[in-house]
Image 1 (cartoon, rainbow, N blue to C red):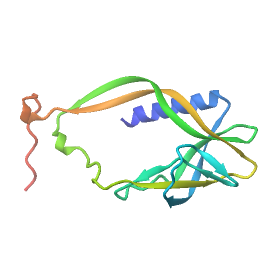
Image 2: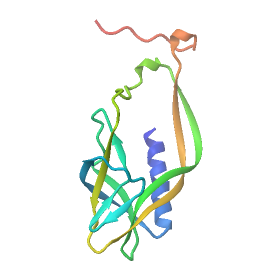
Image 3: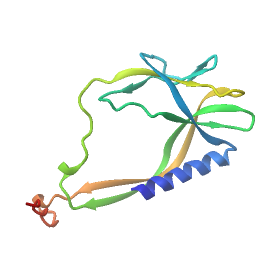
Image 4: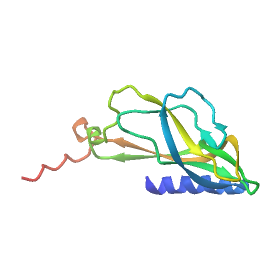
Length: 156
């Protein structure tokens, strides 16, 4: 899965470069409770992200990706898969061995704020559709007649 992730990343980087842009990361300056905007915007020297949510201590990333051009214009990068190729991988394991997801707590709305780099002008969000390879894993549980061997006994 890491190889597919790396290939997908390179496709995105190449697409952005083909547009004459460069990907940069901006560090989150503050995270404030609340926020109700659905759009990226700037206020003075700050860039405000659309309302986001966090829960269960999952936190937000420390940095977000933006793209800039040679003229000093800056956009929030909104990359999304436009076309997909799919690869399925079957694994002999129990689905119960999947990692835990979610905790049931209600998400908290937050406003993420970035500092606008000196000499740059924020232009909003830029949608960048790109082709991705999607990898999915299915679990073939030996208890359900899949043909997978039984799980080994735990060590004593």
